[in-house]
Amino acid sequence: ANQQAEISKRKNEEILTKVSQAERMLAEGENRINKLEEDNGKLRRALEQSMTRLNRMSMDSDYFVDRRIVIKLLVTYFQRNHSKEVMDLMVRMLGFSDEDKQRIGVAQQGAGKGVVRGVL
Image (cartoon, rainbow, N blue to C red; front, side, top):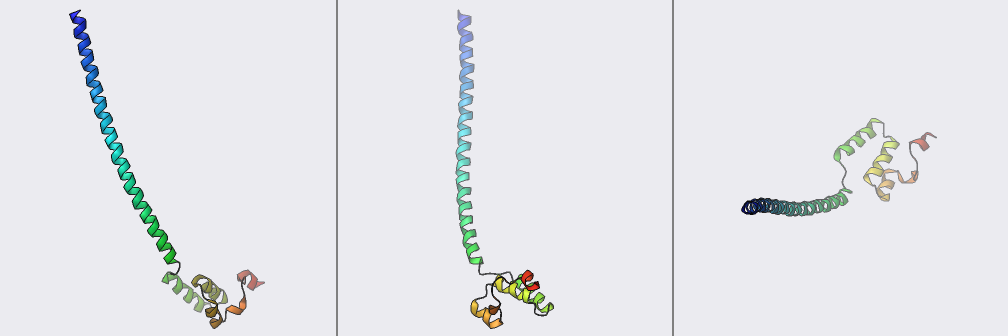
């Protein structure tokens, strides 16, 4: 009976040790999860701020054109002896106003005249 009691006591202690280890591992896992959720929240807020900033910059950039594109268009325009097609492209890309179009003589051409229509 004493041996049985001793064996049961050891098994009980082993089980308690394993339970204690499992509880520690569970607590560590929960701590890691909490840390990851906190980091995830920080990253999500940073992403939202970046997206907001990007959207704001995107709206502002509608009024900006890369100067390399403008240079290329101007060079092509003059290389092709004042090509109407290049001028039409510049008018569209740079968003000329109706007044600007009239000043350079593009306004009377009307919409829809492109390369294909010009050839026809």
